[in-house]
Image (cartoon, rainbow, N blue to C red; front, side, top):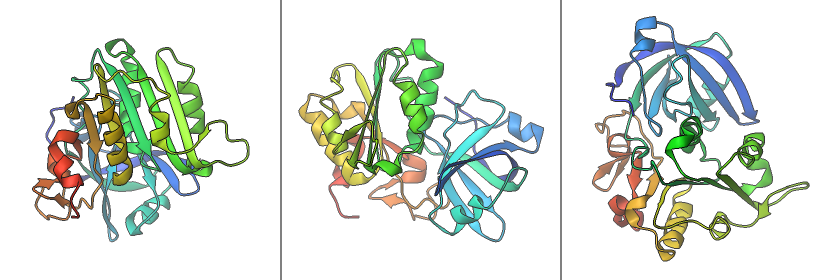
Length: 279
């Protein structure tokens, strides 16, 4: 995992490639324009950057690429607000500001020699995409990779071809469900929690990494705990209104925690008391 200090002020980055993933979701592949800045940049899976557009604003976005890809770093973004809509209008060659990386990432070192179980819901798969990339690139360090994805509607599933390709890999299982399936949907219809039994998970040698709606993650955690999982083996990525990146502005405060610097990744035993509260 990266130990580099985050850039506290934006540095200029160029869009090397832009990929339209779905009508509302796009990926920006970026590279810092200053070679020394690019060489000094690093991140761990689960961390995020603040992307800045002059005259528009700044927004926190998860990094989805592998940390050892020293050529580019990728952000997959959903167009939902003022800044993300403005970013969606940028094309290859355009430039923006980037500062980071911020936050605590996924426990990849602790997950070695164990099954890695990814559970995502809705469109919240970006924070764990870096985990999938990380495990697949270092396959010998981990046991099974189990990917469990739930969406509300079949049309919400992006990267469908990636799920199908992952399912063909050794020691890799993929389970996908939609609350509402459409025509030709090849996966299961139902809730993401209904997939947990299908995966035949090992509660004593698995590290679970979750992201998505808070209610879904709570339901998955309760289910896994009833199956014998330890609270310390369940990890959640909490997405809150992060605006500064270092716990100063208070917008992302969650009880006594600041998501931007104490998280965004937390173990269940750290925040279970906060998940039960109305914040």
